[in-house]
Length: 631
Ligand code: CUK
Ligand code: CUA
Ligand code: CA
Image 1 (cartoon, helix red, strand yellow):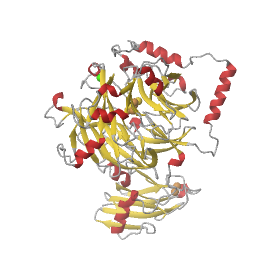
Image 2: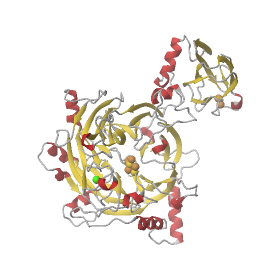
Image 3: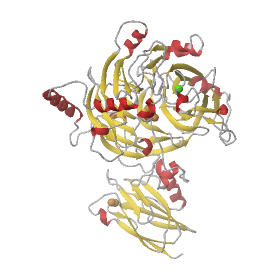
């Protein structure tokens, strides 16, 4: 997202036919409005305010030892991780390292994590935006969570049974994976993701002009995590979502102009939503009607212009979020530089692809909601909730009434506008991306927190606000400071996630350690052994609180040492660590897990290793020594 000043500067008037010509506020006026919203818009008596505050506290209070009703999975933005929160308490439960490096678990340090990240460890950063949970028949099945990396054009998969990242795929031929959603029906066979930026093809320095540039829509096989196919599109790609038939996906494009400067991207009054005919694309790929690009073997089809694979539905203006209503009826594109959202009827798409109707015939409503609509979410009762970035509000509106209004009836489709603090991007209602949307909680991820928390220097937290939407009226009940920058989150019922308490010994997560042990004739579950293989030394040890199976081992300076630790503890929560002092080595070994790490033995001398996860009254005593001899 752009900072608000950039967003409003030089923004021309909205000139969409039929809309009021409402000029966007200047940056200075905007800052004033944002500051004032903190005071609330209605005047309340002190008693009424206290009663409302008390009610809010009771709603979100999850007492000591009590469990939350929902899991929330938060993107960690350009921090690169995924965070697990309990909702409604908004207590942080866990962090799952994905594209980042994590000192506590050894993510980016252990061999198991390098198997996922790549052993060359090319990138140390990531930029995640969109966490989404795999589905079967339009309902969360709790198996995987997928998330994009805009910074380095990757998609990761997290196994939700152990809450660890188990696959990362680099998407070839494109740059900057942004929008990401999953096929909902019949199940998540595909992960759909948008490459945002157009690049020259081939992008090898032989050509910099825009003539040869394009970007692509991508489908990844959710099980193998291989890229299944790519579709060349006109313009660029921002956000995406899929339907409830398994047939269509749709993406917003804000740069139909294919501009490389800010003013250029705002030149057109309308950009578009591109609809992908997933069925036809998959059929073409299956029939071998595709090309490949460069060294990549990924099937590519051309969806530019008037192809059988795509339709480009004009919508105003630099649209951003794209959201499917949980009844499966509509794709909703959020106008960003237009105060409107465009409602596309999914049941008209067959006719559109058969050329029986015109592109704009698929639009069944275009309600005017307020300034800077970015994302929409749903309560399963026919209402939509759209964030208004510039107005710093959430607008609750009724979809059926918006359609009536579009058809000329005099009805008011706006139900309520609620101030949020401040400048919201995504919002997400409980179970909203599934058939089970239950309309209980709404999380609004506000980009600015200003006066809401104790000051912590020039860098502020963001403010993820919790709103009770179970009644007629939205009620703000909690301010949740978050670190950079959870663009999006997803809320699932707690019974939809089933986690393991301890590892299975045959877990594929440490299969490569097991394979190496087998080659070395070592039994991980019982042996404490050193295998020397030239300059490579493999040290196998067990751990049982509060002791390692090996408290001393000898290597030579410059040896490539791999330490494998197998935690034999069977007791839930008894996680050990392994930290080798002055070697940059640290890792987690949870009950029944095997973890391994490879490093180069330093200068001759004694180096202590110790357990760095507090596991026992004698945790401090859990250690050993590596003796390094002269080479
Ligand atoms: S994007 Cu950031 S607020 Cu990446 Cu889903 Cu809209
Ligand atoms: Cu083992 Cu601390
Ligand atoms: Ca544009």
